[in-house]
Length: 546
Image (spheres, rainbow, N blue to C red):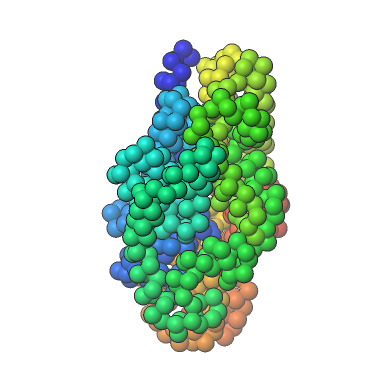
């Protein structure tokens, strides 16, 4: 394909964006995505934008902005999975644009375009386009803040305002720790380049003040929902301060593992997580990081490069030392990873190009082979169609892009991601969500019994049922709750199998429909193999009390 390289990279960015669109029309996945969607639905149902409710109770974990964005989309487009996913998709594209702008300003246009291609084609960005959580928003807002502060560093006050606005947005998604990837790079850059006076400049203190001004809606919301009501039971205790949780427990409490939400940390967790999450670029990225340790490779880069790699390094280190770790956290610094990888790619000589031409081709062929095997064993209705499409994507990329060239490595890697999107968004995820029983039950109820009063008994993780079922879903935490509600007109209850016998014998429950369930974000070999899948399936039921 004889395209000018910058035109090629623009083409790949558009191709990756178009290939992401089918994700918008798939279902919302449990647990986090469906929980956030159900809470955003509650904002619309209750017409209350300040108090958050999840699982039928007051909810205190993440700040409000994720839910405000989704609820605003529901207000415009109606409550649907498309309306929930659209903002994340658009903000992901905005993140790619800011990534291009930042890398272009520090380096050049080509580096900016390559960085955007890498970002949009990374595996965990792809999966997060379907399984929408909060991290895409954080990645975009922190990157936008870094870009505007970088411009402010070059003496433009309005960029201080914009940078602080986006930093505040990031805080309103996740909490104050997001200031670490925003400011760590600048502080280390100033110290290493001996620009100590920057630390005393009033504009940076104005920036911090503006951040606190912009987060006041969150502080007001938390204060009115929790601090004014110490009698509320949160985390199984009373007297919980929403403000204290926001500023301390949700961030430092998790890091030191002494807050209400605890985890078990492994210092190597994000090292091996990045290996798969940043595919097909992870081998290149790790080589680029090793390359940065050699001083002769660093001095050829613009001094502002320190802002990029220091931001990534400090954040990665804090994540690794934390006791509370989840794979999607690493998304927050994928923009920095993308720039580091793009810079390394552009430095490659003929020997390096040969090496990574071979490595990227091997990754391409291995991934296509793995997906083809999965297509066969999963039990799709048309496995040979899926395998044929994957082989066509591989053949097109190898026929269009030839030669041991930088453009070939980038284009083939991007085409691999396009093939992966087709496989995931059109075939795999829709098949997988047949086993997300809450979604299936909610949709069935909406279509067959739209006047039902839906409820959940003795099960608090029915997030997709909560989102897809018509209207507000009642949470019955025990049988005394059921006794108080059993005479409600059109009461239909979503229950796990272990509750069925008691409901049938003591409450004369009628089974309306049964549904197969598997925890779709914790896949196992037995589940993926159609022959052994029945062994690991659970069952849920919709029942009506007579």
